[in-house]
Length: 306
Image (cartoon, rainbow, N blue to C red; front, side, top):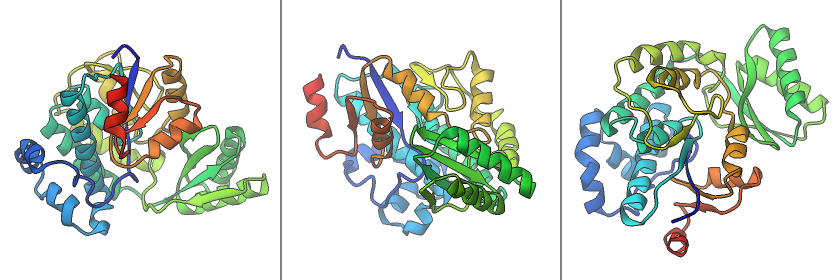
């Protein structure tokens, strides 16, 4: 395939019960032993038969999405003549990108995101809002004002598109920031159904715990160009790569910058994993040639590209 190809991997919020059902038992059995060794619970059975509330628990969601995303990647790359030029992922999805780029062993990746989820669950509780159709400068200003007024944390967490920014932080500071935003003309401020505040300084203890854990995990440099959330650049070496993954917990996801970097190649964008969240964000960032493994026509569409 001559065209430039980006594989993008989704983060939390893309999960749903039964998201492995389209894989054959024969294919799942290839990975079953590794999944069982990595975790002290039956992740594959939980995704297939478990309660939705369990699947939505951060420490379960993270390995579940990584597993679903990686299986899609293996299925595509092993059955079709497709290899990525760039891999990236939104928040948790960056770990799926690391796995796809052969930076991590599969078992290590599952354990790492499970631990990451546990560390995040232990963090100070807060809230997150999606702010639509509001200038990032206004959002920054309202967050700074609210943070100063409450002596608490609130800041942009996901810079998803020019028309969607998610803010994150302590409940009182977030609510005040939303009030300021509405006073400044924000029409849509949507509270997300989460109990954690990702990508802000409330995650500093989780980041410290992750830093201690990640020291003992073996990494390799990526086989493909890997774009990181914190600055939309690639790591220089292993230490730099690990540091970027730690910083990711407390710093915003620079998804607009990532999409702008990818767009200059005018290539093919493949969302690899459950649901179509990143496909929608790609469209909102004016990306063309968007494909999703969750599309019922994906295989036929990809065959036309080959």
